[in-house]
Length: 278
Image (cartoon, rainbow, N blue to C red):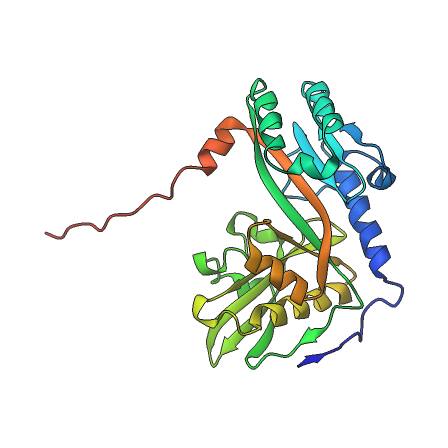
């Protein structure tokens, strides 16, 4: 069962307006113009720090590719400019985000001590599909004081311990007194809040994730912010949750980082061995 709930939503907000807000934010992040994402030809911009950028970004970029579907806008350094320009002018935009072409980019960036690192798809709410999903479990709206004891591995997608100050809103699902799922919103920039979701393994495939995600999306919209959702292409569980919750693909993004950064991310998690007694 799905029940539609549009009370308290900004009356002048449309899906088109939401997309325009996202493009304006991407333009801030990439140091370009919002209209650049609508062109047929690709665009390059020299990356620069901006206090209005998404707060988890490390600026300036050495190489960051973004596409809203029409073209690629590349935010680069002066050093990588010609290399990235040659790459995005050689292949169609959609193939620039796919292997085997990414191997070409990775090899070209190697001389700058860079490697392809983050790749993700971003989703925005489609207002005519965004509905409040029913849930058999009790849902509770949470704020920052409620998060203090929840920075645990099982809630690492909903909350971020390294950026606690950005975790501003959440919705929890409870089986009696037990928290079984959590959706969190981080205030990543002034106009857009990102949604992350965690559901305990034994409670998955029951529609809880979409119930929390859609409820949190409405709460974000009521506060005059645009909710957005990020998932890796291969994370089908997360992608399906986004779509069930009323979100649709909006843009894709790829970021290159220093090889040392990539190597650190590829280190296996440390295993803590139990101490022997005696």
